[in-house]
Amino acid sequence: MERDVQLVRDLVAASPGFADLFDAHVFNEHGVLSHVFFWDVVQETVASFLRGDETDWRVTLRFLEGQLRLDVPEVTQVIVTSFLFKSAVAGPAWIRPCQPPWPHHERAIHRDPTIR
Image (cartoon, rainbow, N blue to C red; front, top):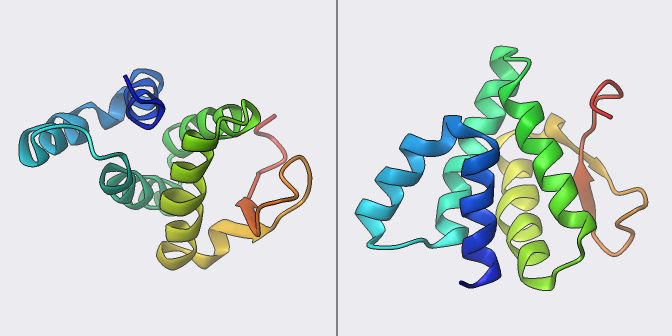
């Protein structure tokens, strides 16, 4: 299985709230298209943040941060291109200028200090 597809499957396992989105995506796309699926992830994650759902968006951020730390190029590409950059469009307050540990990325996830 390709790493980007595994990323999507692992995200759904870590955050079961995406299960229905995933099932609909696989049905509509006849498979997993990671960059396409992540647009739905962005919309749901930002909506969860804006609603004040304390769990959903934090689970997603923790998961994605952990995946970025693995430094797998295919995974990093999906997260940066299809989550971080699209998050900037969906909700500019969601992101901030990058600080280490990912100095090669222009943006990083806005982290609430209580997430650690």
